[in-house]
Length: 303
Image 1 (tube, rainbow, N blue to C red):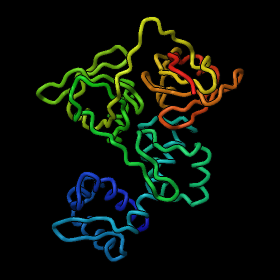
Image 2: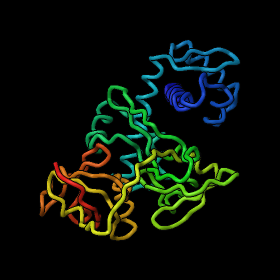
Image 3: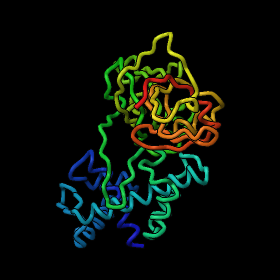
């Protein structure tokens, strides 16, 4: 359907114009896997509909109307990705294509229901911001991992390439959004030596450029500081996450929620025998008692 093709182009232009403005026909052809003449024909259609400003040999930019429509499609796409991973349990390397099919057939009521079921989440499984229902989207200070100068400690925010092979490799290494790593060394070829969970890894330039991150302040601990389980924090107390117990399933769950080593958290409400409500990265998250007992923290204070 033409409406689906229009939405695909608007989405592609929005994503590309953060790095390239105006967006060239060659870039869109590469992103969408179509010929340049096909892109040119569609850009003329979008211009006639008032969705883009287009100049031959220069490229295209979204109009305000075009951007609003693009953000709506992106919101629905990323909500579906969350639903497919969080509710249906699909792997994060498989949800992009499914979400592409579902985004075009999503009504406002379904969109609202998805957001409600997911607890109004603000990022997709790959770490990208989900626009709110008014079309607002958070623009963070994230940078490509390749841009950091070692030594530095950073938190991975997103994976800016949804190639299934790359995502499976990142999954195997544990480098998902929320993971905290130390960049130790940068080689002349741009590859990075990093440390993650007491393991040293080397990332090539391309992989490092696909990961975005934010720098973290160093958090130091003295030997007399006592580790306790997250479930032992009282309501109003704060702490810093130190480690995890349990298997890979628990680790993956913790990372997806933002509970990464070095993260500063606050206990909003401890129901003692039931779940706990914890604030991490400015988001309140409810987790079960069993998982809370597997997360070790150092108490830092109370409010």
